[in-house]
Length: 241
Length: 247
Image (cartoon, rainbow over all chains, first blue to last red; front, side, top):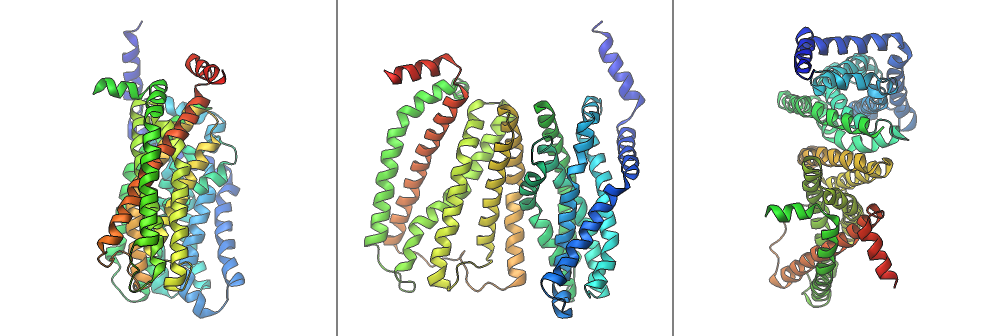
């Protein structure tokens, strides 16, 4: 009886390779998201609304908006990603999918990575695509908008990856949303500083390749470390419930 | 060595050891801190530039020291929690996190009090001030997560993961905040390059730093003992201890 078990496990893992499992987790998340289109739209609406608050609340003057537009867009993007993180594991946690994922023979951190990538494609990337429009509304010039989009393109995956740790840690807790923000915002600070710093440097006509390389380093670091931490956090959260 | 290591896992053993060390920690800490403070506040010479207001460093510097080293201690304990599942390690993390928060706040507060007469403002977005503020947020996050999870074991392990993620991030945050500050405003005052300190100021400062470390040790033992009593309340040795204390 016992002798059969390893053979069985081997057979399963041989039939579905790691990359194939990652692709199917990724595609499943995308498919599920497109069936609930409102969830896809919400972060974008939130992003636009937060950006609207600044000219209304601080000053609609062109000089102010030109100077702080990049910062406003970065903060708004950061907040929208934060808002959407709750969905990353919540539904799968509620309906038991997450437990099935943990039982798979493939390493959990790779499946988590696939889920996080899907989350970025569904929230981070649309934010980047919306940025040029809002950038024009904040009177940013073409060069700044291009740099801003580039920094957001590198920075938003980092936000999703770091955020996945917080989402995994707060899974199934009461008032998880607020707690998630408390845990994650301090960790987002470096990305924000370099994201806006790059745009400021570009506006002054400085070389930005060094800054972009540093942001790329953040991305690589987050890609290699964050999935392990969130997989560990998921195991803890699921053993808790 | 290994026997000592195994004993560390036993709350009961720790309870006995803590009882033996605590009076020494308290007495040593109080003597050193009082000596350092009295010397520093009353007898050390005036600073030629700042006058008497510099004397707050005898509280400010020890608090800032502890604020940072408590986080490092918590991170080391977090590794022990995750790797060896040692009960005492997570008791330590849980007990000292509020103390760390307190010292971080104290460092920021005394810094603000010192900043008003010296810089003419309560707060500047200086790199060091900002990274201390972020450290305060990290402590806040750790405490908030710990309080939100009801199950003791999961709380301990979740907090350990968070503390470790934080400790990986601290150098990155520190570096980026430094970079941010030099980018946006050239440093008007450098906190990092202190003028060479006179011996009469340096010795009392050293005394108060050591004293506060010892007092922290005492406070940590006290808080850990309380936490252990709460956690082990159903065990026989705690019941016997409480009954013996009642007589």
